[in-house]
Amino acid sequence: MLYLVDFSVIKPDLGLIFWTTLIFLLFWFLIGKLAFKPIGEALKKRETDIQDALDEAAKARAEMENLNLENERLLAEARAERTKMLKEASDTKTEIINEAKDKAREEAKKMIENAKVEIENQKNAAIVEVKNKVGAMAIEIAEKVLKKELSSDNAQTGYVNQLVDDIKLN
Image (cartoon, rainbow, N blue to C red; front, side):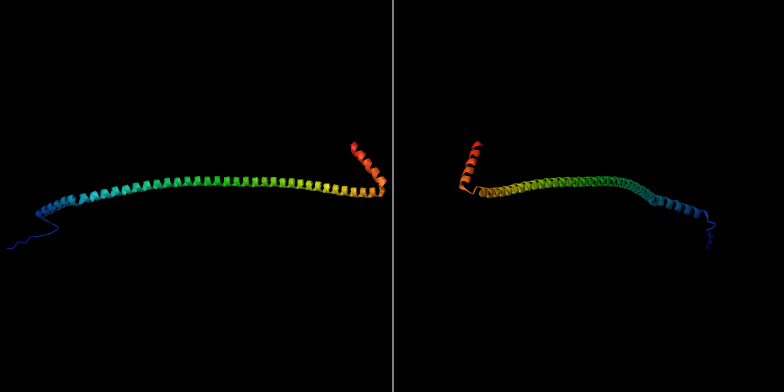
């Protein structure tokens, strides 16, 4: 004889509920020990890693801001140094130009003084030369006049004696 058991999912019997519950609880306990704990630890580790990465990113961002501020400070110092160097170069240029102008003025004064001295020397030399020529011409004229007036030997001798007497007196 065959017993027909009326098996229906909608209306389970007590044995099926007991075994299903027991297997479910055993499964839940094993999964909790073997899977949920490692999954929970992995999730906690992942959360810690994400938080550490966010902290590192914030730290890197702060360092980048500090570096940017430092770069801006260095750029400002470099600009100030460049401005200072340009001003010094400009001052040096002006000083060199002024020195060159002063030196040129002094050189021009020296050249003018030298030219004046040279002109004075040449003038004096010309005057001396003119005096010498005038003296030579006067001597020539005097010779010619004396030759004409002292054509006789007696007149010449008398004149020479007079000159000798004048020289002795002086």
